[in-house]
Length: 178
Image 1 (tube, rainbow, N blue to C red):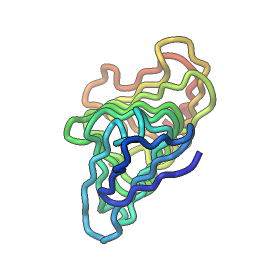
Image 2: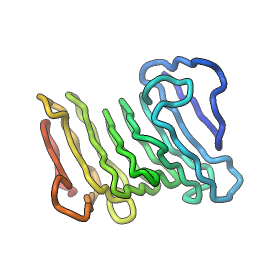
Image 3: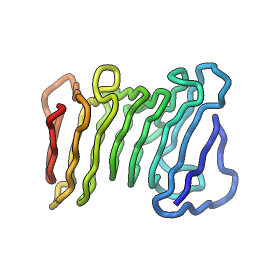
Image 4: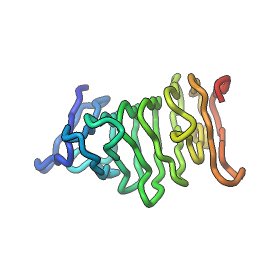
């Protein structure tokens, strides 16, 4: 495993780049201190079908916006360490197979975040409420799961209607911070 860091709107021009299992793709701003918007694609260009781990780490603080251009699948962990991570104008769905940590800003729109691990222990941490609240949140695949998610910080799920706002299919959820 390792980390591939992309600055600004930098793109991979190689036909195929195979990243090791468990590797991380890290998107940063361009460091110019201006507000920039970058689009994150569901299939990282020339990197395969999905992300193993994804990190959003703006070098320009909260001014940079990283928005989804399509539904996103992260097989491992999703980390927002700086900047604004948005589901985009299409309110794209996000599927996460591991943990989620946010110390930046997450703009959920009307999108859905689904945690799909079938086994193991995972955490949700950082800013999970206020301007970074989830809209709709789903835990567990619809089949047997022994996964356990621990919510380490106060969390808000804020869809406009109560239908399917928080869904727990399988697994163990420690909701002490909800």
